[in-house]
Length: 149
Image 1 (tube, helix red, strand yellow):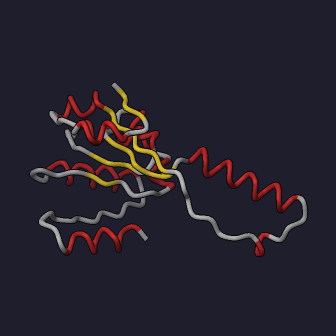
Image 2 (cartoon, rainbow, N blue to C red; image 1 turned 90 degrees about the vertical axis):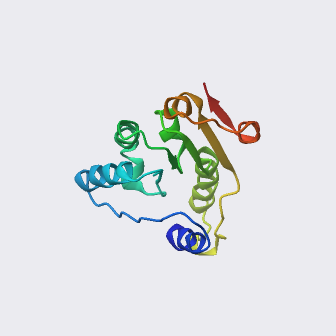
Image 3 (cartoon, rainbow, N blue to C red; image 1 turned 45 degrees about the vertical axis):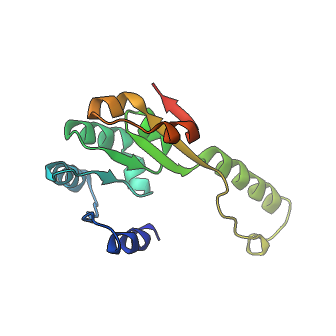
């Protein structure tokens, strides 16, 4: 879902898109090291349970490579990552609980409407930006849901 969108944007932009699917921690380490060797490289970690469960490892590897990265889950940023933009997971879990309640009260799951996330959060880590030598624009800071200083 996310990759085709990124590829479409890539087709109309000047940046090089290198897709690096990973299946284990060795491939993950190699992919981040390769991204770090790219001049003006960066990393976009797409939403994925494998990646999310290794957020501390990924943040440490990107820091070692001095690599700016954006993530889809705020835990990355709270662990030292640069920026996270994605669904507000607490809201999603609350909404899921209401569906569980309805099912337990007898409604059929197949009859419940599929819901799209409606709340998103932007978290910026200024400490990491400073370490990377980056200046975060004031306009971006103004719209952030959380700024880590």
